[in-house]
Structure formats: structure tokens, C-alpha cells
Image (cartoon, rainbow, N blue to C red; front, side):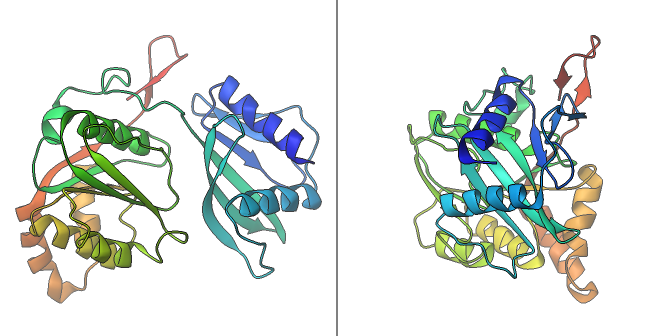
Length: 282
């Protein structure tokens, strides 16, 4: 394995329009396309191959490989601009990774076959908007489309806090600041507290992972900002239960009232195959 071979494999992902690339020892690279895992005909990967890939990705991000590394989320870009969200992990003593393809183009609601009501939802000047659904069902892509609409429609100061940064946004009518956990800031909680001092109109948080992040997002919503984020849940009702369940029992009633005051919408996504079976639509 060398850098040229790695980039050629990743370029195949863009050419074939797959969503993920899997690298694991004693297997060839796997691709996920149209919701299905596809085993490639490439050579089997060795421990040295996957360690080389990890080193390449970490060096791209200005980091070195720590022997105590067990898992990390980061990103990687091809020379031609193609981007990936990367999840690195250890399994059976070797490194493995899953690389999520990030489309180079941020699509509109219409291009993604998303309902027009999303444009009405993001017009809310304050509050909390959540995009939810299982992994791989288009939460990040939908959130990116919403961000595009905001930048093209309003004159806002928008701050994104992500782990890692996925879509790269360009300031249009709005000014956009993108911060990455581990590179630009230490944690979601600290970044959110800092964001409130950066004259924000809109704050986009990549994911609500813990109680501290949820609480900080609600506080930002309560202080007159529009906050957008994602959550891994199965539906609108389970989203409410998941948020409240992060807090101790004695705090849950207050949290329920706070959430009722700030929640603008919960957008629950599922991808399904069309009648031909060749395409996946929300």
C-alpha cells in the first residue's frame, strides 16, 4: 500500500457514487453502495497496509500515530478535493477504518427530493432544530442543504462546530465560521460556550452526543439563537425521550419544559429504494 494506491481506491468511491469505504485486515476494501456492502476484487489488506493508511490520514491532519490510539474520528481529502469523514479503530489488534464519502457539492432541497417545508422550518429566527434518523440515512446531507439555504437567503453570522468538519461551506450572504473538535477547539461544550461570545445568529452542532452538549444547545436556543444539530434516533417521539433521558430523574421535568419552549422541529429521516430499486430516496 502506498499513497497513490490509497487515493486511487478512494477515487473509485467517488466514481461509483458509493457512500462508504471499509478497510480491514485480511479483507479487501469493501464499498457500501445503494445501502448494500460490496466486496471489491482488490488484494487483501495486511496490518502494515491499514497502519500506513492510518498514518497517512493522521499526517494529513497534522497528527502522529500514538501507540495507545484505540479510536478517533477525523477527516481526509484527496488532491482533487474529494473529502471523507474517517472513523479509525482497532479490531483484533490491528487498525481498521470506515471512510464516509462527503459529496463535493452541497445539494438543494429540491435536488435531494426533500420537502419544501424544510425551508420554512429554517426561517425560524431562534430555537432548536434537530435532524434525526439512523446512521447513513442522510442527516448530515440534509443539514448541509439547510445550511446552504441559510447562507444564500439570510445575512447571518453562522458558526459550525463539528467532529470532524464534513461539508465545506462558502460565505455567501451569510458569514460562516467552521470549527473542528480536536483542532480548533477542545470539545463541543467549550466551543458552544465560546460561540456565544462570537456574535452568532445561527449555531450548527454536528451531533448531540452527551448531556453537556444538549444543555449548551438548549441554553444557546434560550438566549435568542437558532441552533441546528443531529441525533441518532428512530423517530420524533424517541428523539424527545433520548434528550430527556440524558439528564438525571430529578432534572427531567425542567428539561422537558425547556425543550418545549425552544424546540422548533424534529426532522426524522429514512432512506428507501424507489420502484426501480436502483435509487435511494428520503
